[in-house]
Length: 381
Ligand SMILES: Cc1ncc(COP(=O)(O)O)c(C=O)c1O
Image (cartoon, rainbow, N blue to C red; front, side, top):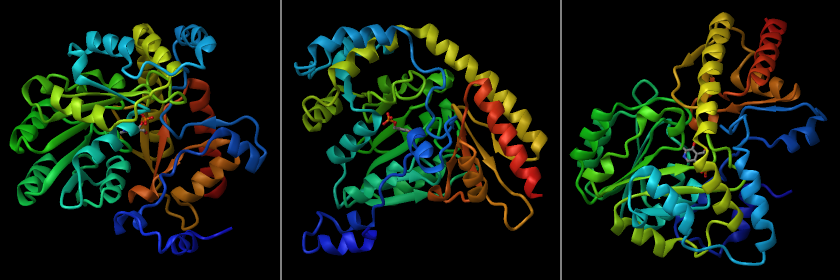
């Protein structure tokens, strides 16, 4: 096996567009269930690592997918007519304000390639979604990380950073934020957007909005044409495996994004599934309810175990592992949980080595997590 360094040097003299690309590390995904089964031989795996919906997806999706199976030889509708129509109705926007993506990550990449170049700066918060600094590196742009305030975005400091860096082209804000689960108040966010020049694109990443509908900042779109809202069908809608996301923006921004995106970036199956999922808001309500109930239950269990956590507005929770024995760390607990078939997310990559991010599961998954965690902590202490 080659080390990353040797792969890198073997690439030379094929020089990437920007030196910063050499500093990129591939995005670390949550460990797939199949991989854990292969590596540790555990069959009964609980995955609480990628903020997926533990209830699956709406039963209507199955029928919608089945209807597409006879049409797989045909390209999808490159404009996503029906899905865009449905999204326009639900979000009270014009169809021309919508851009579809192969997951919302696709849209984040399209946004960065459309707006940021090597002379530009991209601003984001410490402890925000790890893709944002990667996008800056990818575009050869200057990434500016603003220290977090109580694990969330410090919007005053971010506004000051925009003022101090006139080459700022984009600001990424995740609300609720991943991995910390923090939420921003409407007024604070509105004041931030009002404080930055209209030439700065403010990307509001609302991947977890269905779990926290009160965080919805759709209204900002009517007031500011430099705001763009990015959402996904991967989380509450339970379609992570299909890859569908969408962006709501002003018409000129959508027009630009539509020039950059691949012509058929959302598959025919994914388009049909997303439209069916969107129509089933009862399923979203059920998912939100499970999340709320189980979040409260888990908070109580963490309290009982003496573990700190950050109040979360999404479908995951960040837990602090601050055990006073040298051999117990978040990394060792993550590993011990893996060996017993429970996958959670370590956060060293986010600069949070003492924390684990745990996706809220169904009651059975969460009980298994807590029982396993308790036995690891009590065995070791
Ligand atoms: C804040 C945030 N934005 C975007 C995404 C990307 O999700 P997807 O590409 O599956 O839509 C994620 C996934 O974890 C996320 O947490």
